Image (cartoon, rainbow, N blue to C red; front, side, top):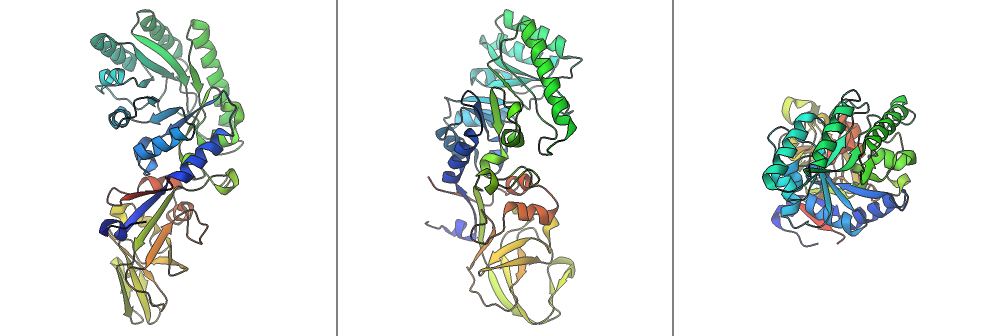
Length: 382
């Protein structure tokens, strides 16, 4: 791989071959009639939305999913004009008209949103594609069961006027990553009930969907007509409690690497980084890694984050700073420019994103998603 000065400093390698293989592995877990939505919100969980969307579609995904309309419109602007794109996190005053003109499937959780999208449909003279979201127990976005009949009724009125087409009914799990959690069955029951009400009232959805990554992997009864795969598509297990990436036949897509910027000898008793929370126990060598919390390296992983440097896994020495952190090389001598691997698939002995999540007391979703724009993405496996 040809390196530039920018990518030599640090880079996130995105293995599109692994992503395509993950999509195929996930497709194999669902029935042939079940469609797959590749969720590429938050710049594809930090991996790069456009390139990952293209790879996912190439491997068999049929829908793309984003959180915000601006993310969805950016995909259209990048040339992804063919696939269905759904976006679900709308706020008052958002670009409904642009969404209609771009052919987006837009989520509606309440009467205010229905009013705004129907007004935009009148303005543009085009029918809006909408999906009604049911709050089956997550307690975030979505329409409460008590308010569902009114939303369905008003949506059908708008459909009869030619203003909207209700293309989907959907919801989202709260605890699908906790096998056996009682809310899973409760939410499925609520979803089926709300679907039944809508269909009895006259809604004819193209797709009904509730399954996120953990439900796609472990709850075939939740697959309905479409599954929405986010973190699993990027080769990260939603939660080690339900299984490992390798156990599901998935391979992590992102590897985070950097060049060691400086290697120096220091005496024993030398403080390292802010606050001197690490003091060298004896004469040693220190290596400086040019990544910090401005790049998405969690400060909470100070003194715990693992890094493969010089064929050995080291631990962050002292605090992670804004732009850099230090590792104690325990006397090993390396040349500046030696490779430091913060995380990757793990098959070369390097740490994984889950290892960093454990070190920081968070989830692996956050580790990959927060890698900042100062770190260039380098695409491999094309």
